[in-house]
Image 1 (tube, rainbow, N blue to C red):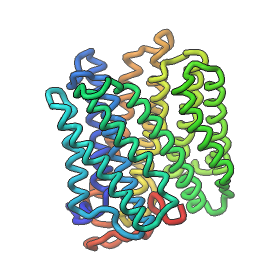
Image 2 (image 1 turned 120 degrees about the horizontal axis):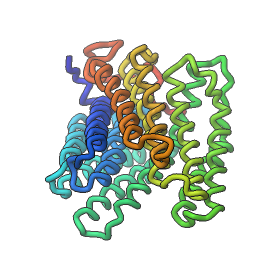
Image 3 (image 1 turned 30 degrees about the horizontal axis):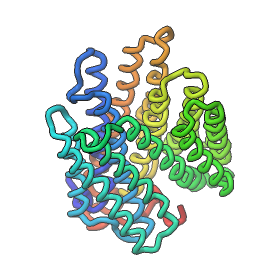
Amino acid sequence: MFSSHVVHMPYRLFFLGAAWYAVFHVLVWTVHLGAGTQPPAAQPFLWHGYEMVFGFAGAIICGFLLTASANWIGRPTVGPLVLLALVVSWLVARIAGLNGMHPGVALAGDGIALWGMTLALSVALVRAGNRRNYRFLPIAALLALAATGFHLATLGWIPDLRYPLLRGAVDLLLILMVVMGGRIIPFFTSRRLPWVTVENLDWLAAVSSFLVILAILGGWVWPEAWGTAKLTWFAALFLVARQGHWRPFSTWREPMLWILHLGYFWLALALFLRGGAMAWDWMPVSTALHAITVGGLGCLGLGMMARVALGHGGHEIRAPLWLVPAFVLVALAAIPRLLTPWPELVDVQLAFMLSGGMWVLAFGIYAIGYLPILLGPRGDEAGTATERQKNPGPANSRN
């Protein structure tokens, strides 16, 4: 049954859109790759990259930040009409990305969705004086700027910088996941496992984040320098060292926790692979980026969509048995994709299809299983007009 809560909580519609679009887009992409036919877009690789970064990931970011910011400031960040406008704009941009649609429509759709989210978030945080979370504003703004620049380049209004813009957007996603994951993962772990000593050391958080940003900048300025590769590996080691203080191996009985820990580990592994691509050219940088998007974003995105929907929806934050296979599938989906540079080891076409198939199954399980949770009433007080946070959501004032 459709609940009035749907238009009051941003995560509901955005997460629903992200999940179903993850299934649709990757299914279409994988089928066409397997059949050797043309995907429904004029420039398929640009379409695929853009839609996964700004379409799929963009929806998760909008739903997460607009929901989390309401928790940070103690009141809704956007009202129902604004929320509907943002969601519809996002959906229009997805339709416009298909073959035959004018890029100006996609520019307007994603412009309204991403810039609107950034503006709403900025106004809410500034009015509340919530300075601790100002750090998310430049990331949101730069993502919106990258999406706008992509469409302007497609229209021919600026030089064609679409591939660099996509890579820069993935780097922004990496920074966002490192920062946010570093806040929520140890917090959730300590809350769920109070008998486990979880340490989130401030100095280690600052150093690891700084090294990640420095490694990213080095990859742009000196992409083939040994020093940049070593710096990237150093950043990866610091992420692993930081995560070690969160006691990840203590979470093996808690799927809602280990999926987040796996996602964070994928970020460190992505940096290691990127360093190897720079030093030894063992894979294209674009392939190494899939450790971020398929591995890190897949695990953290699905894990947080599952957790937020339960926590903010008044349900117990515990993974149902049918969701655990989805976590396993998404955690493994990046592996065959990362093996594609070595045709002597794997059947490349089969690897593409296997990776895409695992992704589609993982998000398909979520998309179907979470329909009643995302569209229905709260689990603890059906019929209530507004949602109150009774369980830990994506973040609270202490995060």
